[in-house]
Image (cartoon, rainbow, N blue to C red):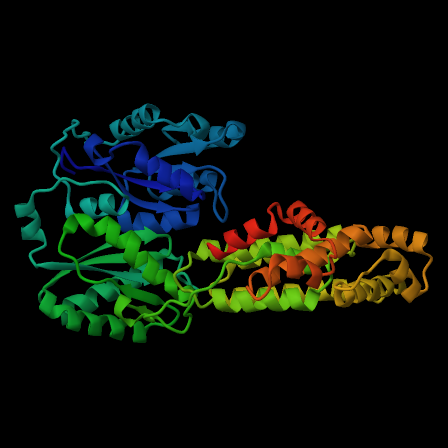
Length: 518
């Protein structure tokens, strides 16, 4: 070990935000340290140790699969030379105390984590390593290519000497190649990732004599490769990438366009490579993505009209509402540039809204309430848009069972008949009296019955139906506002305008101008 070797550190925590926060607290290389790996549990950390040979491990206490207490014990048995720092919360001191018996250096309380405290504990750990001396702080430190790549990927700006860089990376162009192991059953194991990494590197070395490559971790199950190559050799590189994809199952790959500025590495990774890899979510049968191979036209879709959907639901037009939802989802699933998190969030939100709507309408939603959280979890874990669509269809089937059960009850059938009659006859001079006469109800009883079983009174419901129809006619430009008021059942134009503004918040003319300007 040289006197000025960088001290290698692994961060182990099941919370991604905590790991990312620690990585950005200090300028690691400038302080004499380098992060050589990160893991989300103790088992992953043990696999990383074999590959990275760290000097220090910073580990959380409470983690799934293997916690920090067990990790500490195993590391101290197998690798007594590795120093360990514990990350903990306030209520975990009993666990922390047990790790001190195994020989940890110190512990850091997560809520009090700051750059000064972190650096102090790191230097204490480094001082305990025999024959190791932390490099004095030096703003002109020369980073290795791997260190520069990792800093650029993390969003930092990196100063480098162009002449030295051209020696390490001698060719005119760069591109990024990504290997996505998220859909592979062994994708999260260190052994498998090491094998895949070695296979890619061998394929490049054997088939491209004029190329330099460096690998870097992008995410837990995604490996990136910076490839420095002559532009004339790009066709051969594409061929090599295709051959690799064909040889492996359940692996997605992507190759970015070439670029010439090394400092653009971070932007290219974020804005091109990661997006290309995410497209497999929408195209699960495609395993190799390049920008030039994507569909030229991205299908457009209108935003989901939740107000209309809710209105139709409250009017118990369930078939119409669900058909609109399914049509929207079909279109949405072809728009491959939509962020995956945003796509999944739509499914979770609509399931939540449907459950609440049915509950407010006095349907028995006990089963839906019990299963909605399993749907949320399943949607979060889907690996393709198609899987999410199937889950939504399953939920809609359960919702329809809930609806069908209560709609078969006699009083709900009566209410359904009343609402259907209003929907058909709304343009007529409809009153509670003639509605009661048609269905052989006492008018005063019908008023109470309607409010009890529909959550709104007869007049309020009739006005909502009429105004909703009026908004559709306003968009057609085939009739004046005065004519439309008569077409939807209002003999008094001024009363129509008053009701319209009360429901929509705008006068008919203002509403029409606003909709036309969109």
